[in-house]
Length: 236
Image (cartoon, rainbow, N blue to C red; front, top):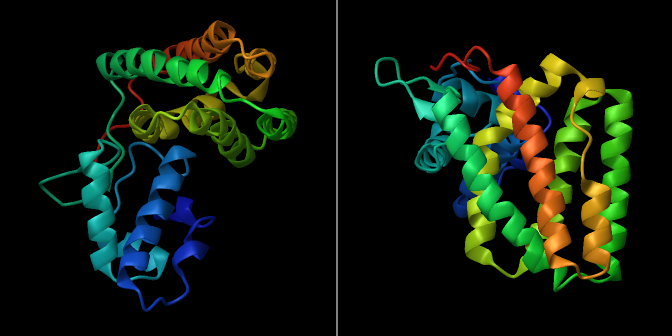
């Protein structure tokens, strides 16, 4: 698992006098690795090896892991204390899908009321990056850009509680989204609805933004179901 953090550990390699900052940066590094799927499901890792990869003491890693376990993004095997992404059962996938389809389209609808030309330009640039990542088959770039697109919208909703809920849901599905990308390849991914969402946001069409994001999520989760005929991730 730790080897998947190579692209984010730079955030915490510099020694910092402020230990609170160290703890926050370790948490954010692991969190981003989960959201973008750099931590693979079904592969256990120890706190000590994760701390060595991040070049920090075990204490901030232990604190970050405690927070991520509470957010259901990581699980600890009580027998050997190793960490892993929880397995994705059919029931858990269904619950995540239902939760996302309630929270995220609502955020998009609210964002439509606050959209401006700056947001539209930002989304167009990010979506171009998504398309280029798909063209190149660059999974890291795709995962990062796709997340950035959605949360650029959600941040404009002015709904902190719902946005935090969406962030927690992405923590749980990120590793499996990456597995789907690896299994089906860029050519077989569902066509994104980003252009439809941008058009709706541009015109302040809350219902249109809601529909576009709901369709985007539904198609992606359908791909995840198809790829998960056998459980993704075997646990710690």
